[in-house]
Picture (cartoon, rainbow, N blue to C red):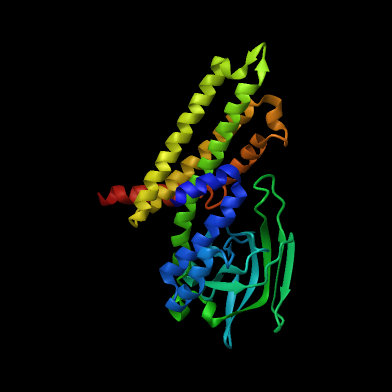
Amino acid sequence: GMMTVTEELSRGSLATAGSLITRPEILGKALLKGGTEEQKKKWLPKLATGEVFNAVAVTEPNYGSDVAGMSVTADKVDGGWVINGVKTWCTFAGYADVLLVLARTEKDPGLKHKGLSILLAEKPRDKGHKFSHTQEGGGKVEGSAIPTIGYRGMHSFEVNFDNYFVPDENLVGGEEGRGKGFYMQMAGFAGGRLQTAARANGVMQAALEAAVRYANERKVFGKEIGKYQISLWKIARMAMIVQASRQYSLHVAKLMDKGEGSMEATLVKFYASKISEWVTREAMQIHGGMGYAEEYAVSRYFVDARVFSIFEGAEEVMALRVCARELLSNALKS
């Protein structure tokens, strides 16, 4: 069900799909994996109904997929923690009521990813491209949206924390959760990668439909371009790829429903992301010069598709550090 909803939302608007699906799942899965019962009761129903809107603050200017090296800190103070440092590519940070912040709570550098914890930093909603909030105690969080070539409805922010206070009750997992934030957020990221495949499928489907419509309307040398063999070949190949990617994604979704398929989610994200660039390019090519015009949605599909290979794990990291490593490990075990 989630895959179908995600694909259909993405077919209409990639930004809408991203706002309603991915971020709540990442926080929800993290809470289910390591949150206290009180935290689950407080946050999960509100996330499900949309009463609370969350953003994910994991990536840093110098650390993206290299989560273990992250440097944003959370220092213990009376009654809670204060967060300091900069996060980036924090999508919908302005509008969010709460930020999932992956921060370093344990100062021993040798702990690497085992020194990270998740804190839930609450803030007021803001609809602008910039926001700033100062707490009564002087702590401050502010952010600015990053201009992008595509994915226009999804405003990703650079967020600066300056002694921003988070109460003890918002340390996910409580004391038991200290140093376990990496594992909690990874539980959500696997689902996020599968959703990225569904989002890519939705954008590909929209591009295919746009190409078919245009091919039936546009005439060149006295007949519709859809009647030329080269156009028919392009459209048939696009349809084949979209259907194959969709079925692959649904297969992985069934695995994940059984608590399996983490590596497969990475593989299908890798595949769908890469192939969506080709499908949207072909759809743009069928449109000819008008495919390069902003007035035609196919130009949006093309630039939107480019982001899939970058967010939710860059394709190079996914291929080398996740897929290849696990494949080799399984081969050695067998």
